[in-house]
Image 1: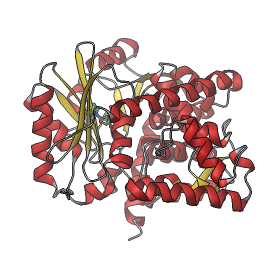
Image 2: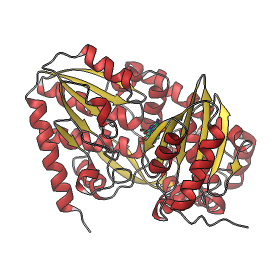
Image 3: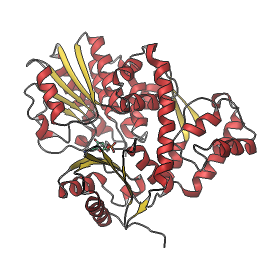
Image 4: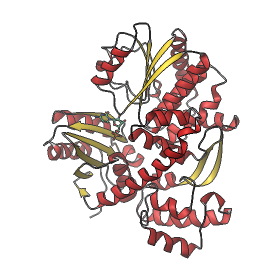
Length: 445
Ligand code: C5P
């Protein structure tokens, strides 16, 4: 199936969104603080700048009532409000906004939306969790605004890689367009950032290996392979030796998608400040997490000023994720149908949950429950194999959180929730029960 009809329908929606945008002089952009949300915002900012349309961008970690209040307070009646990477699941919340709204999102739509136009792959039968990111969706609108906006395709691919998507259907169309325009080059190799091999293996959380974070073991591993130096300077044979040795390590425990996520096509961004797509994703995610969204946007706008600081922050942040994963391993619990942990003040729970399900225990989805001050936040991650067996984490987390007085949602493969303090155990057992009814988990006795 080539999805040409669906892609055309999506482009028609993008055209409608572009028409609404062109009717406005001022746009209020609200987007998400991860790599996909930040690249979505940057694509829209760059497209609007080119059109001479003024804008004001705010990056948030989630869309809630306080964000809606901010939009209402800071927008004039004639302004256009654009939500990127959010808004599809919060129809009730955004109905309070009287301004015209455009939603550019890839989350599953819920309820009747008050938006004038929603561009969302799910509306045309394309899976937004895997085949189109918010940045890709926003790129289609940028292209509808100006066919010459192909230079923004690199950022669309960064968003897709950040959301661990597949380069199928629409993503593949964008990738081909980017390659044809010379915006992206593709080379086979390890899907990791650039730099000294030993350093990268030490601080990079993905792929998570049995040597990650342990310099002694890394030196031993590289010593046996007789490899050292910068990864970008390895010969083809040396790269093959390294990828084969890593593939062997992964084959022991990881999910098949983790292997795919670790070795294969690596994208190089020819028109952005950071060439390696994995370095770019790490920088953007770090800036988003550290509440330095301005820095992230400025890098996406090709402003070199903050680059070095952001690069250093990204290395330190990745190092801290590796430490967190290593600590989380001690707290891992196994239920009937889910792996989980209940903890406090853990950073980067999404990444911890994703590592657990991809690299440590791929037979069950993983739920990280983390209390921060008086809120308990939950991150849940699955694999594509589990999803094809029926797993729908968005449903499981929405229903389980609702049953304990919280709220949640997201995608079938990656979802989140907020739940009241004290309900952690009840919530986990509810998720376990719902997931059990969704999938046949193949447990090893
Ligand atoms: O926070 P985390 O990265 O784990 O969120 C994963 C997904 O779950 C995101 O798509 C996010 O929008 C969604 N989510 C949600 N409701 C929440 C928390 C997260 O819909 N309370």
